[in-house]
Length: 199
Image (cartoon, rainbow, N blue to C red; front, side, top):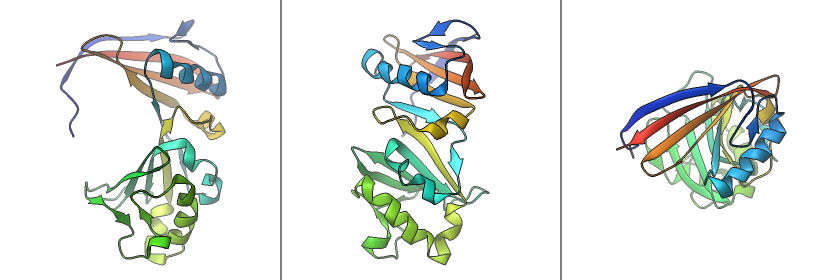
């Protein structure tokens, strides 16, 4: 599905003060708590986290349920990288980077050793461990990216390492703001915004 066409109306940034309850120099954890309040006030439900990558599957046991969108791939991106979307604590969709939609990954493994549509989030870690043990798929665990954070879920301390978080919301009819929160040493360094007029 393509996003609707949009025209940039304005760009702005701040390096002091506050914006939408986010304050420059706030620690990442405090910033996350501020963003969670935007679920009620601005309808923001997901947060994109830049460079939130790991190759250590073991550390993901507790982190996987906190995210909405996960990407498994080699260090050099491939068409066969796997995109997993989670919604309401279960697997909602599985796509390859090529755009091909799947009902199960890997397609040729038994149900107990593959990710399937409708799987509970709690079963993902165990299944990923089994998939990684299969030589043909081990390289898909070179770079595990936790890209879209579910704002209804708890803070993930690893988010502190990210240089940027961003999200969108609708400040008025026919408008959309993209808000980029930039970090240095785990604190907000500046916030930039782009306002779009939606056609």
